[in-house]
Image (cartoon, rainbow over the protein chains, first blue to last red):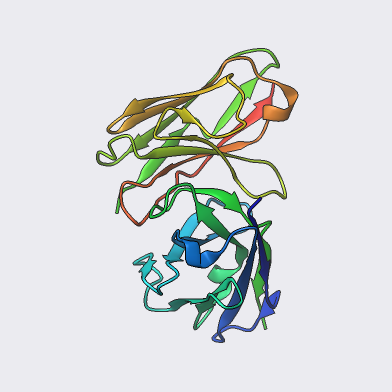
Length: 120
Length: 107
C-alpha cells in the first residue's frame, strides 16, 4: 500500500521560503510516476502546484512557476517542495500525491496534508 | 488555462435521493476528467477518472458521464457517508485545473 507523509514547518514568515518534504513508503519513487504537490487554502478549492519524475523532470503550474522548486531524493524515497517569497495568500493545506497514471496530474494516492500558515 | 466550472455550488438532497452534479470545461478536455470527494479534514478521494471509470473500491452508486466540455457526476441513492464536497478536475494538460467544488448537504 502506497503511503505519503508530508512534513515541514507549520508557520512561515512573509517573504521567506516555504519548505516541505513528502516521504513515500510502500513504493519506490525510482520505479516511476510523476509525484505531485497540490494545495488548498482554508475553505477554498484545490490547486495543482507541480509534479516531478524520479529523473528530476518537472512540470509546474505557470501561476507559481517563478517561485516553485520541486526536487527528488531517490535515496531517501522522498520529494520536496520549496515556495519562495511567500505571502498570506500561500497559507494552505499542502498535499503530496501520486497519480493514477505515470504522467498525469490526476491523483489516487494522497498524503493527509499539512497546514502551512504564512504570518509574522 | 482551462477553467472548470461546477454547478450548483451547493446541492441539498435527502438520503436515498439522486444527486446530479455538473462540471463544464472552458475548452475540450476530451475524456480527461476526474471527480474527487472530500470530507472535512481529509484529503480528496479519487472517485471517477476518464470521465466515467470508477476508481478502485468506489461503489456503483457513483457514475460519471460526458466528454469534451460537459460532464456529470451522478450519485444514484445518497448514503449518509456521501455528504461531502465534490471536485472535478481536468488533466488533459499538465495544469490539471480543478473546479471550485459542489457541496452536497443533507436536506
